[in-house]
Length: 211
Image (tube, rainbow, N blue to C red; front, side, top):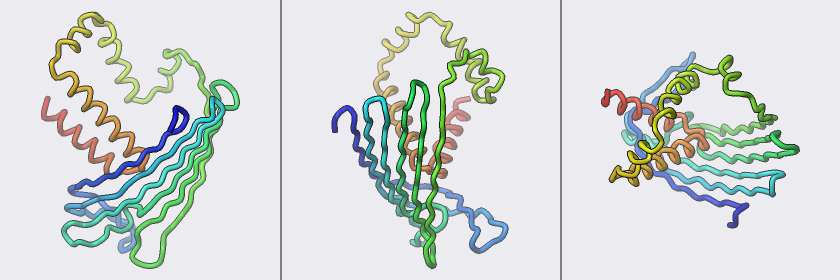
């Protein structure tokens, strides 16, 4: 749609084992319930437009149809039926961002309806701080990554280039990396907590098996 406009349409069809649903309708305080096997289908559309360097607007709509494979029943409460989201970001001056976001959510419920809307706004500014200044407020994850990065970056660039260049399946590795990142981006955009948890669990298992 041109360099300043993007339109995306994504369909998804996946199976999830051991989905955890927090039930607050039948129990107080709410309790976790395990759903053995879930079939989740749906689609997502997204459109975005950038007005030079002044502003950007994005619209997103997601429809989800979750079914309990063991009972054939719809899954209520945990996964929204549909969600519409709009984000407007303004760039009034260099390195300053003003973002306004609104979303309307329609949930699956057994009786009546359960809809709500949320509006958020935030102002952010690039501080341009030296990395050393960020150590005072860095999280544990950032600190660990920062400790590992220097040892990798201090290696011989020519050696690392050869490692990449002479690796026969490198294109498969690059493609798998892109696909994994695209999946994470999609899960975050859809606010899919269970999907994100599943990906992290799979990664944790893979790392544990390698160690």
